[in-house]
Image (tube, rainbow, N blue to C red; front, side, top):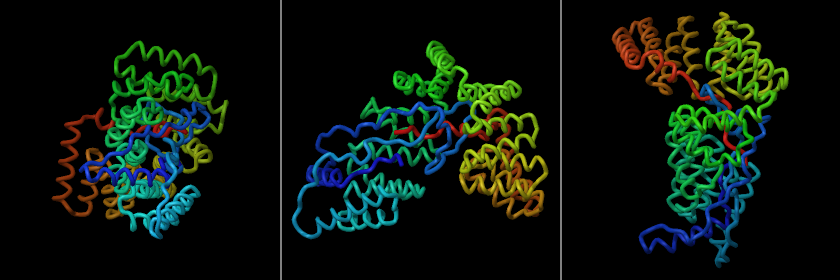
Length: 454
């Protein structure tokens, strides 16, 4: 699944060294090399599907995308033979740990959780049990519990980069990119050659608009990624925004050199036109991509977006449905299907698709806004208010949410609350203007946020 796992041998090794250090009032580990990276990132563009764990991470930023999969930093690497200990209790701890390790590798999270909790009952400061429980809760998307156990493991084993990498992944998979930067950066500082951590760190800088750091973080892996169209595209955009003209020209020149007439290259070029509002040119490139590979993930999604821009909603709906057939677990397809159906006046299918979208990805404020619009139109004001509250939690500075909320509250006869919301909407619009509003309403390109492969 890409998370860093601690084996029973590592856990015994770390626990022994942690205990030895406590008398000295500090927590240190016997010197050992950091976990090595797995194989380099796969540059095969044919895997351009979304993976927000376990299937997809779907956040949209409109200029770029990368072919990512999952990530590994020395998964389950044994560093020492476990020490032989006398007595029943230590043996029971070892047995429980091995049982948990085996269950976790087999994907039986319930058995693994029970086993590692048993270890912690007997040995609360076991770093491996804490770390692996963190992984279990990551796979269940119980992010708060995952952070609790991973941070405990990091305190007990501060030199193990993989634990900090998992902490970064918890934030990354929730699209909390600013919070993910420190743990990923710490891994890169410990091991500057860590390809995968460096890639994720570069993406976090990109998502937060720090293009200078994006370029300086990603540039050192040019040799490994020079055949990755998506890497080159992202690097070129970051270099352009950071005013590093030589790097921009090198990246985009290389992109054109290796892109050729491939469907993936036409997809990239189509997206570039799409993001410049050049819809006819985008359609020409995207149709070439679809003709070359009709099952290329996101080619039909972007065709749908081009048709949405042109207000050709039936064609847009048909393209989104084609992309659903390729990627059935991508929330943004359902979000855009909801928008298309709403524009066609088909509220029933629109509501169904918005609900499907937020079920797959509860962070989609646009789907909550879509639901609110439908419920307001149907005079279901409590349901509309509930949807707007959910959207506001995700994007509290989005003026459109406060405006719609004010309208709904006014219809409900709550004039004082309505005035407060409308005043807030006016203040936000005056402060941020149209350009800032567009920035808040956008999300990263769905292909981009995928994690690098092993």
